[in-house]
Image 1 (cartoon, rainbow, N blue to C red):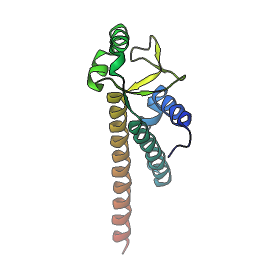
Image 2: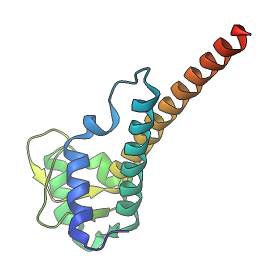
Image 3: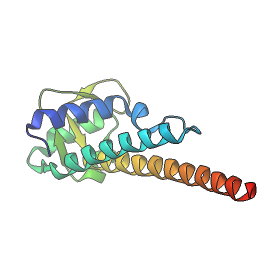
Image 4: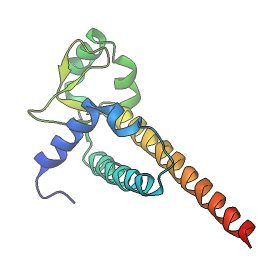
Length: 143
């Protein structure tokens, strides 16, 4: 749990400005590295959960968000989110097309990132299981 909202907003900004760093990294054969990657992804998942718990409905300001979404091709994200957003206050993330910055995250964007993290975690868990099975078979064959 975050003591200050700014810390959560700062972590959110880092994650969404550097998405590839958080979900697209190579899966290797080192159990130690795989377990560290899994711990890292668990932390990211927990941050995304905390972000999700802080979402707010911004339907009162529909015209502002509608205009912004149309201008920067984010209409689908806005519609999918139903004007439910995470406010970053004075911190910014890039728009989908990279032409501007905004100080909020869309609900659907957060869900998509969470799903990507879960997929990456499952790949790592599968790789750990595969390595453990290979080791088990090798030990069994030594007898």
